[in-house]
Image 1 (tube, rainbow, N blue to C red):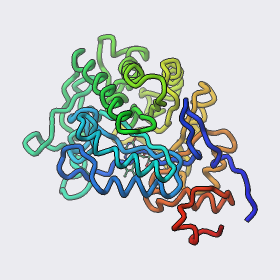
Image 2: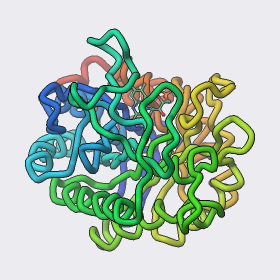
Image 3: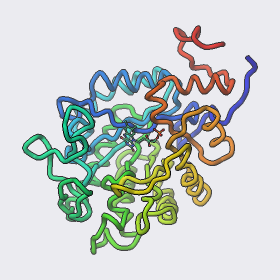
Image 4: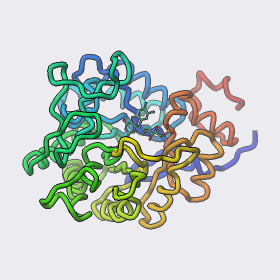
Length: 364
Ligand SMILES: Cc1cc2nc3c(=O)[nH]c(=O)nc-3n(C[C@H](O)[C@H](O)[C@H](O)COP(=O)(O)O)c2cc1C
């Protein structure tokens, strides 16, 4: 097969980190920590190892609570203690041995925390009571996400504890060997709740103007940077629109991304939605790409896109035409962990990282 050069398979550099291609795996919760202690299990080793083995450039570990009450479900991962940190290290090692880079999404679920996972219960996605291992959720304001328990509004000390917990978790991520961290600022979780006027009704310096609503996100990024030093790239995932009037929107997103760039964030991962229960979202192939493109063009910050991108040609077109710098492929990678290697084959790119025992399965 003749060798072809494709934008999707060009390496990308973020600070000192070079990643082998632009086809990455976004964070996807597995909800398999049955002991409810936030510690990774064998499933995670297999799951992340196989995604790396399948040719992805960067893989982002699922939403990982920076504090116990920052988890979505009791079965989420956590990084609030050293035992969890030590259990991540073999996963990082396995991913590195496959030539991929590993990030971790540091998360606080805010008012959308303490819910049942999607299986093994009659009430998936509803609040787990404290008596059954759930917890009192927190948020910028005591306004419930529809159908979930009412959160407690964070006070200044609580806000400062959140920022410190993100920084401490980032330190543990560095010590476990992770290549980058991604701050979860999207999908209606705590940092997005602060950004959105729909969920943030505060009257102090964390509410009202965009500058105030973005204060905690920037505080978190600053705290992480102060803790991890200059070497490690920091990513931030944002929801660029809530798909309803009056929400955090693309214009505000562009402004926040400019600020994030000034605060040393290295790339942004542009998603949408999650803070409004029933928003009219026009789901379809690449439906979030225009938001990533708008952010990239207006700010010059390295930008990834995500959402219903599931073919090699579609992904190549996005990077080759400059619509985004990185393409995150979620559910298609769950269906086929070798999606990146198959994309290379489809696009006729001779990548050097087909695992030796698998080479006979590919044409080269
Ligand atoms: C099983 C599953 C779990 C997910 N968990 C997370 C998560 O932990 N953090 C996050 O930011 N997004 C999460 N998402 C959203 C994905 O990262 C991605 O944005 C979404 O699936 C759209 O991309 P896709 O169409 O390629 O799957 C999850 C999606 C799925 C399907």
